Image (cartoon, rainbow, N blue to C red; front, side, top):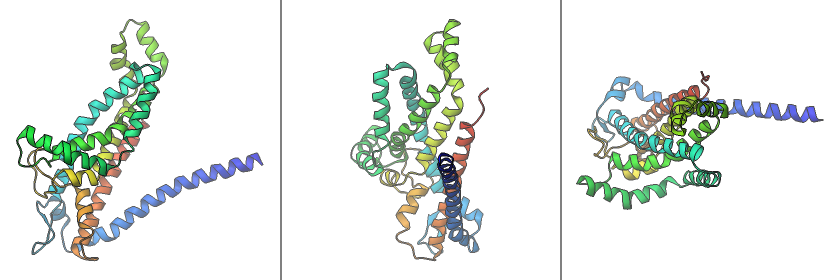
Amino acid sequence: MRRLKELIIEKTILLNGFACIFFVVLIFFFLAKDGLALFRTISIRDFLFGQLWNPIAEPPQFGILPLFLGSFLVTLGATAISVPLGMACAIFIGEIAPRWMRELLKAGVELLAAIPSIVIGFVGMTMLGPMVKNIFHLPTGLTALTGSFALAFMAIPTIVSIMEDAISSVPRSYKEGSLALGATHWQTIYRVIIPAASSGIVAAIMLGIGRVIGETMAVMMLTGNASVMPRTILEPVRTMTATIAAEMGETVHGSEHYFALFALGLVLFAITFIINLIADAALHRKRK
């Protein structure tokens, strides 16, 4: 009976694993079915490198380059903010904080991940947007920088959690050997522990980027939704996710606009898939 139970559990876990892969493949074909239909009338080059997104023009324009650059600017800004802060928090929780504080901070970080993105968007509109406007003397505070701050706040829990697990998984003998050789605690952290946990740290960064690039509501509320070619991070932009969320309810089923939004979703799917592949490869890389 015990062997039968173990066999059932083993096969159930295996089935769930194959089901996850099957669902991802189904999502890809669902997007590709309508997304690739756009290229019957529009070339792939015009779609990927066109500098104008205007579905109501005559003829309609579906160049996603400004949307891609908007997503890139917001993601780059959020990564530049969240990675240093996340690494500092992970190091403090994993190596410096006393045990009672460590458990408290880990619980607090996990609670941050539970805050809905719409709440962060409201806070950003009422507090962060006016602050950015006044500091940089801008006509509007809804810019790529504002969205970057909000998304950095959303990505930090993911980055801290995975980085802290990677740091905590470093064998204790590494730390003891470094201290025995005369290294200080800080020297041990940045010369021994961080290099030993580098695969987990890279994975945390890549998953944080994936979390940022796939966010919708917060960026739709905070970045200004201007589908123009951005020049600086202090200008309003529109991201790919915000475009799909804002326009899908208004498009006619089966129209070029409808197919263009699915093609945009296909591009976003490919980007996030590549990011997750890189994170998975980094996470499973053999330690030297």
